[in-house]
Length: 138
Image (cartoon, rainbow, N blue to C red):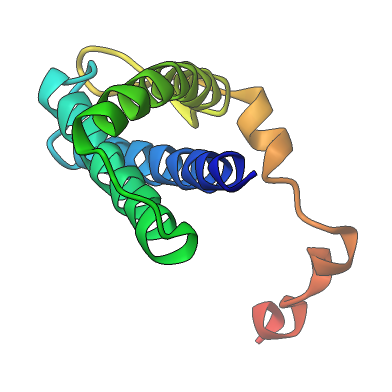
């Protein structure tokens, strides 16, 4: 029973960590103006996720359950848990980025097409249509 609880907590930590590291990877790629995914970012993300999940598993195993923590075995088990979750999360994140991209740019950095799905997603409420109309009149 405690083993299932420990792995469930590890799985939750892995999913949260994968999401956070993919968001940071996206921001770093945008900061460095990379057009395609960079392998060192993926490697660092997997290592960060591995460290966080192993730390969570070690805390649950040693302090809550009171069992011995076998590092090599847990390293292999967590890698088999992390890699498919990271791969699926990366695919989902790339699909989300491509669907809700603001615009498509040409090689000379000019905007070619505005994305209709992005415009529909950013639709404001009808109450806010005349929100600042008094200050516009002045």
